[in-house]
Image 1 (cartoon, protein in one colour):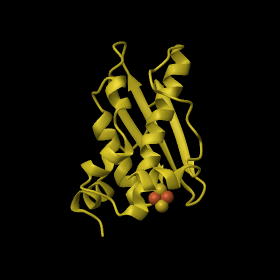
Image 2: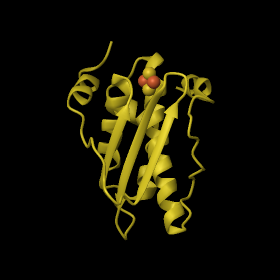
Image 3: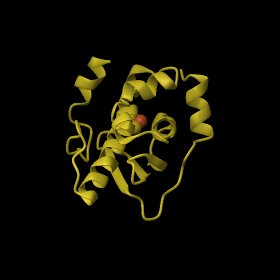
Image 4: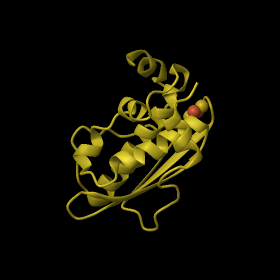
Length: 147
Ligand code: FES
């Protein structure tokens, strides 16, 4: 059911933990399954994501997608990180079962929420970034269909 990469990131998650005095922190949940994900970003003065950590209270796919998402955004500029969609995260994991696509959405939204927090704290606008939802359950069907 799961690719080897999903199993690897689930069993050996990268960047798990938290960052003290993070530049931005984002937490999102999915009320339907009850899973919660939190992302911490350390962003330098050139708007490069120097470090990223996550904490996920959720299913195996949520842990694997958090882990992969942190790997994908680490070292990237904010605008590059904005381009990383849940679909890109799922593809980097060699795919997810359709019923588990919403788990990857949690990772995308948590990164956006952390970027939003950073933007608020620094009084800047990040192009294309909208105020995150704290619960991604709404709109989930549309996203699943889009994939
Ligand atoms: Fe909820 Fe995976 S089942 S995030």
